[in-house]
Amino acid sequence: MKMSKEEFLEQIMTRREAESYVGMSNVAFQHHIRNKNIIPCKEYGVGRGKVQLFWKDDLNKLKEFVKNP
Image 1 (tube, rainbow, N blue to C red):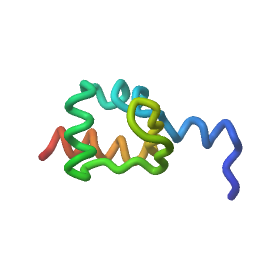
Image 2 (cartoon, one colour):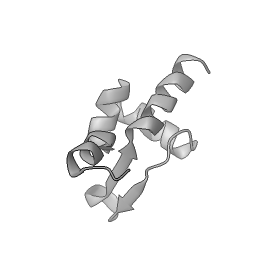
Image 3 (tube, rainbow, N blue to C red):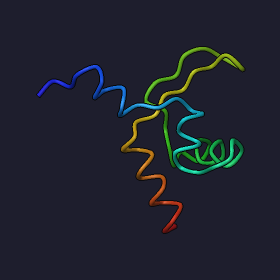
Image 4 (cartoon, helix red, strand yellow):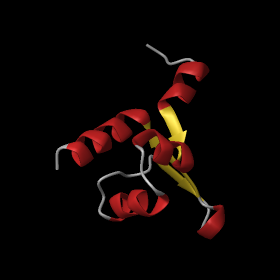
C-alpha cells in the first residue's frame, strides 16, 4: 500500500526533531551517530548546512537501545 504524503511526513524527522523525540542532547545524539547506533536515512550538504533525516522506527529502536544497553 502506498503511503500518503502526510503519513510519510509523520514517519520522518530532522535531526533537531529526532534529538527532541529521543530526549537527547546534541552531543549525546552525535555520539550515537558516530557509533552507528542510529544512521540517517538521508543526508544532504556539508558542515553547518548539512541536513540529516531519520525514520521514526529507527529512533524508536535507539530509544530502546539506550534504555536497555
